[in-house]
Image (cartoon, rainbow, N blue to C red; front, side):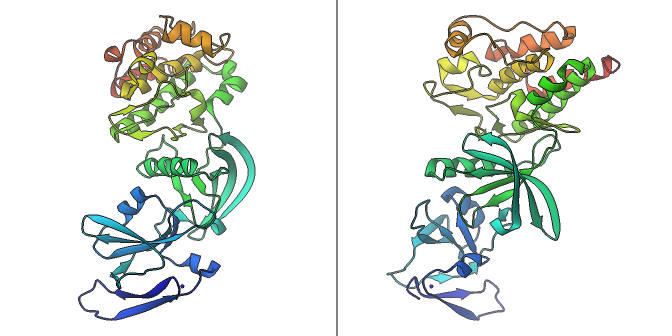
Length: 370
């Protein structure tokens, strides 16, 4: 890239090696985008996490646009400096190129198959990930609208998913960001969403099965809270069911003790705690309320969404502005019905997920033959 780089010297961090190398760069070609230290588009926050030591550097795309300007990012002490290429100032000494992380995938590693769903900023496909001489069945969220807002939303979702390693939380394999559109590549849970299961097979599910579903979901959410995250979108549609339940869809998840939201913007009205509309604050107990609504979904036969006979205005007027609350389902055992009502109580009265897990574990043993 000679017109892009004047001359870049790379020095090894090793004390034994004083050898330096020059990198001359002409106009970018497709081959240059396969460099091990070309990371594609990465937001500033993720770049700072990757570059840890003085002199660590990488190449990335600076923004989502047709021109796709290339940027050199270098760690200098406490700061990460970004320098659009070409350089017009003094030579910069680069110590160590930071290679692509294991979660930074390339499009050539992924084959898309049939579409299996649609999300807030793109479609979800079943696909195959070829990596480390293995072929894995995966779910691939394709960012069809490459606006800066949607791109940053995808990266935000990927950033929180990188933190998770739990049997009841959907696993992230990585992000394919070397070209557009970006792919978010995740574990495939072949059983699909819990709400679809409840529609098709809910009538046949025993009480013990329903408690098992809630227990496993609670384990996953308890783990998210342990990691300092608020899911913000707990509902049957965002729980995936195969042999076990896995919490999914982290598009609204935030790593925070509390998070400020704009009540004027669209939110998940039927699952969202009414207090959020008055305070504009989301906290862990907001997930507890949503879990209570999910408990109602799991025991509803035949399945339908909460307040199914009301439109959005009626739900808002009766639940948010009024005092209406869902009643326990007839099929709910006494202990489950009591927990359900506690989850829908005022914020300070709602149980923690640690308590929810313990109670559901006891109920699971008590009702294992029901």
